[in-house]
Image (tube, rainbow over all chains, first blue to last red):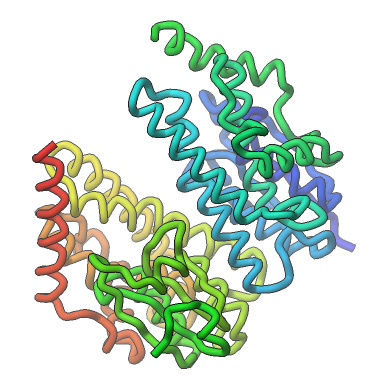
Length: 222
Length: 238
């Protein structure tokens, strides 16, 4: 049987990179992890992803794949056990729809809630609250978006944790609180309790420090 | 007459669309490529139907595909659904790595060509210049891919003589791009420096099931002009 060589280029603090770690670990795929310094990108990274020059990049037997959702679908199609996407085409479409929503709508709004000021910030907070309510509508009574076990959308929604940690770091009121968003709040705690998933979030203290350093001064000057 | 409820559409394929939308057009191309029968509903985007608003409450946009009463939105999500539900004439390649490459390029096209083009249409001055610069850089990459993948025997990114996922995703450029340039007042298309891309556009336009679907130029120019004026008018009045 051919040697399987799997490498992941990523960074400790990137939710996109961490998504790939979850997917690989859920499948029990052995891989070599390479931590990139984004201020000094390695020749290997630039060679494997010349178009976007970004992490994450998965390299499987020398062939590179970039873009987190593209990589996740590739992983699911290459290692078929423990599927990440559901079998039914309609359910797959729903998972993809909401994953796209998270990256295209939630992520920009989340950044705004932390970086913007005054009215713009308030608007972003209202927007995010509505978005998370929408996500609750998709989750409903399920343990995870993927059902009994983690799936594509749970992995994609890891970004929510970044918002929670950033808000904690900056002493902001948590938008994702049990009172306003009980369903999503419950889901988040189940996610962070999951044996595989919890290995794939940035270490809390280091993550808090990162946000304090990056955004702390903008809050202090309010 | 349909009450507008999604559950009424059992066993049917329905597409909610708008004649100008390149996103809707892509879905039509996917359906026609597979020979799938569907009912097309033209939406008035200034007066959206109850069916549209209940089928796509999150974005309230077209295209929406409704199959067996189940609505799906977002053109790329819809196309993958079509490919997985109807197995004839595959749109995406079979091999996982080739599929990953097709999806990567589809993403690139959306982020670096489609989105900046829309933004260039509805902006001016410095903001527009920024988008046009982004577009020019993206088109260099597209031309590079076209040079690498296409030749006299391989007319399309789908391989050989058949269109595939990347062609369907990029296809809107084959006539919308010129309109956007004209109305927006900028230049991105460059036949001299994008020879392979221009060959691809010419070939794509002539594909028998694609050709009749392309909206007439004058109508596209008129509509684009209206969109640009409305958006710029809004900005000026702030």
